[in-house]
Length: 375
Image 1 (tube, one colour):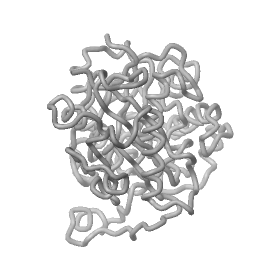
Image 2: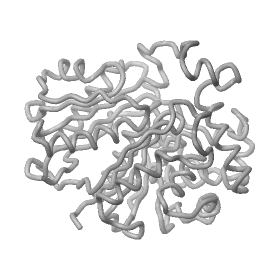
Image 3: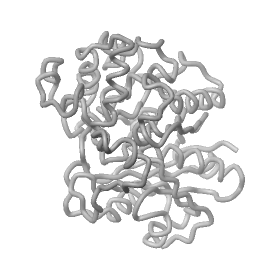
Image 4: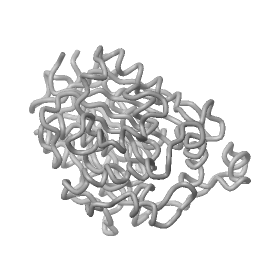
């Protein structure tokens, strides 16, 4: 059975939305995705989401009694896992059409709980005592080791933010659109060495939703799921096997490319989760698009910018477009737009897109390979 994404839409607005609860963000995104797919809630028999509210609450709010649910929560990559799991469920006959939703009041914190980590948790025992508190300080562990071992410079790291701002400038929905230079990045406030403010993701409110179904049930030109993969390495960053490469990135990518039966030269468009500026560098290398230690120079030379040979994070990414806390949904949305020919910064002739999601601090990963036609 051929599985497709038949609907994809975000909330009406992204950014600062203090008048929206998390549930409202989920439901607004669901409404928009259903309209995009020319479907109604009565067409849905599967629900997937992460966090609170969960899939049962979303189904109840929409008036849906699902035959299949998925509440997999593995950080920002969760929505890529949901697409993969939905495809497996549809092929197995467990359900016919799955609605995947995301809503997060990351900026306004409407109804959000306080951040905390139990002292008996792995992070509480082995990282918090040494100052590793949350993504900015935890991600420095990998970034600094990568810079030491590969020779990545501060200027090359800054080029990631510069390249993605070039894409954001072309996207009216991007939160930050003014062009920036390497000097601008390096002059921005230091958050946690080596990360300057412009090398750290945004914090926003927003949401998105997807409709996954079979090609036979799709009511608009579909986006095909050619391949997918998932993996996980360690719940805490200090226990990664190698700080300069993500095993989960590599394994999920290998599985997706093997299933899709395509090569890297077939890829027209790439979305790599970019909570911090070094993550796209790992993605380029761990997915096999460039060799070890080569990604920084590859980006600095303009290959991922508009007009480059491997367009990367064409909506502006988490660094300039939006980042609610779990960004993976927005990476999928942009790839779907590119393959439909509907993106604000459209890549000419885009037929195949790859989406790589990161969860936690290199804890989990999933890769989707999407196309607007079958090979």
